[in-house]
Length: 131
Image: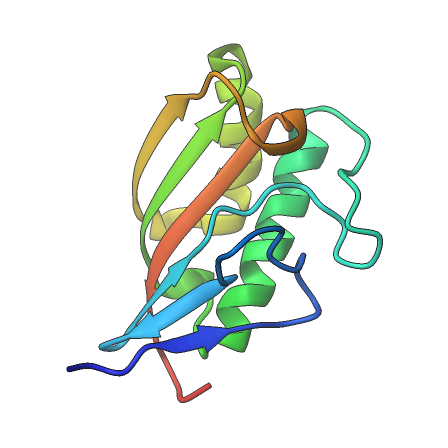
């Protein structure tokens, strides 16, 4: 049986339920969905989908870093949007963070996201170094 390593960093929001920020298994990092919570206050940041996507990407980067990975090693993302009309604005921020790397992605509109946030993103990445 493979070992599963829980990932935790104070640089990203703590899990708000019975789950981990991420799990490392067999050379991959599987993140929980990140929303635009400020890691210190655990409050949803104010602002539109652009501001929220920036915070989500910052949170994802922190979790990946703690797991020994980074955005350049992301294989797949899933983006959940409260409103698909926000796709273009989210996509512009997302594209700035991933650049030409462009991991595989699914984007769906979700009827209800945690804390009524505008965007949630999860990812799968390769581990680049031992955490």
